Image (cartoon, rainbow, N blue to C red):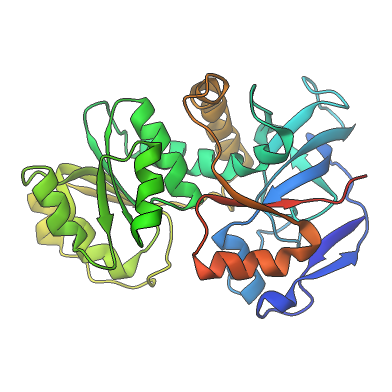
Length: 328
């Protein structure tokens, strides 16, 4: 088969479409013929040499895919050759085939095109696990989403609105904020022009956000704590603004607030399976009903992954960037 390889870390040009050995499904895995994958910030970090796959994972980038099952590994039940699926991966999505643990498989939701289903697993799992399973966002509460026009952001807006929460977002520029509004965002903050702490305070009569979903990290740590409501929960899932910040424990104590930080890729299989099961139970019906939908900026040939990475790094996209595998 062919896959995107990274012979040496570097810029987008480090991504090379090359012939590689076909994967074989191990115990509890299926082999998926990939129709599409999607680009994530973690793929960019892997390309740069900063985020290697966990031991035993595919060396190729790609944390999610959609396609059709072409072979079953030993011990697999409940799935059949020919099933259309999408899956959460520890790596290997930028390829024509990938082995996927059955606990990380999902059926393609009703009403979603197979080619666009690759836009769902990573964002749905990330948002549901952090905003709902860890931070316990409840109806009537306020969620602040940093990077509201990103793949994560567009999913977070929709899921929060679906459960009856109020949503505030930060994004760069009027076009991105307009798209966030279309998805249901109530409070729109242009981080280039406005102070999100002050804007959130004004919009919530001084209360702040009950939950904050943060992709920035250190750069926003102090302001995020100041933006939290009493009993607020800050969920950190990205480090685009650095890894080391100063935390005011007095402010945290006074608000009886909590800070959590998680990632998906290196979690044990059982934890990933539990998250995927929760996503299938809670998110998939919303997709089938059209309440939530994948937001796709554009689809590009998988062999042109370098150009897709350039687009990701420019931050000019809205929603997900899809990579289409060559037709079999």
